[in-house]
Structures are given as structure tokens and as C-alpha cells.
Image 1 (cartoon, rainbow, N blue to C red):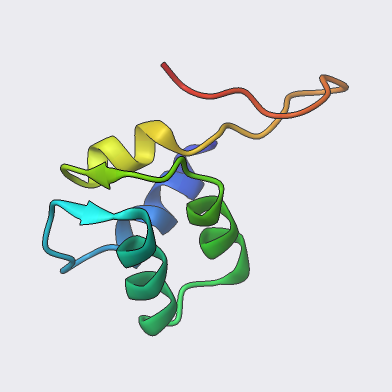
Image 2: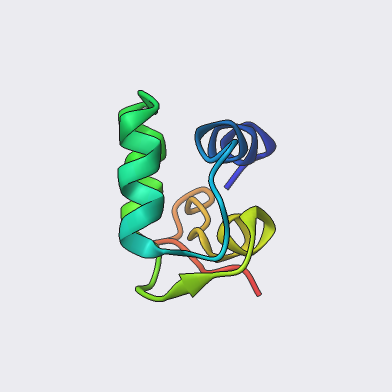
Length: 75
């Protein structure tokens, strides 16, 4: 995930009360008119509760680099 992706996630979840579930993240972002890329990134998150936006951003899978197959989780 790039800094721009992080900014989109941050903006999409601005005002959301945490902790929040995976489903709440997606619903909130969708209701705020988040773009397809942002919603897709949120859908890729593991199910569970997230304590804050930083935890969400850390959990979003990174985009693959170059010819590497698949994404990699941050951690």
C-alpha cells in the first residue's frame, strides 16, 4: 500500500467511532462515498475488530511490487 492509499483509507474512515468491526469499516466507507479501490482494500482486511485507523491501515494488504505474485501483509 502506498502513502496515497493510506490517505484514502484515512479519509474514508474519518469520523468513524472505534473500535469497529470489518463490516462497520466497509459500511462506513461506502456510505461516505469511498472509491472502489478503497472499499476493495477494506474488504481484503481480515474479519475482526479494529481499535483505530492506524490498526486498519497496518492490516490492509500491500500492493505487489514488480512481478511479485500476490500482495503481502504488513507487519
